[in-house]
Image (cartoon, rainbow, N blue to C red; front, side):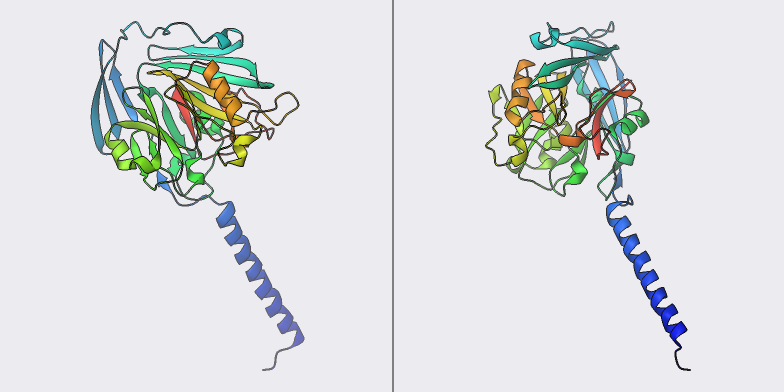
Length: 328
């Protein structure tokens, strides 16, 4: 039976409709629909607080018992010494104190920008936790706001970290679990079970070796800002993003179990942002012996006690792959 013009038109319309639907699905699947990845459960941590602290860490079916000796008593933490001088010149936005965590949030001015500093003292590093969007690492299009992740994990504090799922390489250890062991050209920072940190090129070791030495968290972004009191930041490191003023997030270490998390606003009329050397200068002013650059730009977000306290450069929170948080 010969084709009529009407049948030919229907076939053509049907073909292009199917092509449109298929193309739309492919694009949505590639760029919008979350899929893939592995589920990463929140660790369950129990501890007793005394002169000797015993921490039992439960991760999946693996149980590891870790013992750390501290000077903390059952009366709780005390702040070690005096806060950095630059913080005394700032404004306290909030605080949170328990027997295992001391957090004070400051707002200061530096590099013609509003800078937000979380001064954090913890009884042990297991208070510093990591979360992934939808509790999933890897995959595609798996992102959430820092606020959403913080609320879902009953956090008091959270900040964006290294957006690990944005890259296909770079070591990833979160909450004591090795999630990726593919080496990158970057330097990583590791938070160890004793509350200290190390910064090193990934090419100098393996992720398995780092985990075997009791790594609790490992972030891979950078660049490093300060390593063992040596100022290493430079705008001439070959990364264009480091030489321009941008919103920034960073992690710094004052002493064992004493950390600062920093968020620098930028790309607004009142906050210019900071280049990588200016960010390092801020970390020096906070008495950091080691400091490391996290993901910045529109991702730079600090959240405390139910609200975003900085001003993300895009006017609203950007969805990211992961964050660092502290539970209530």
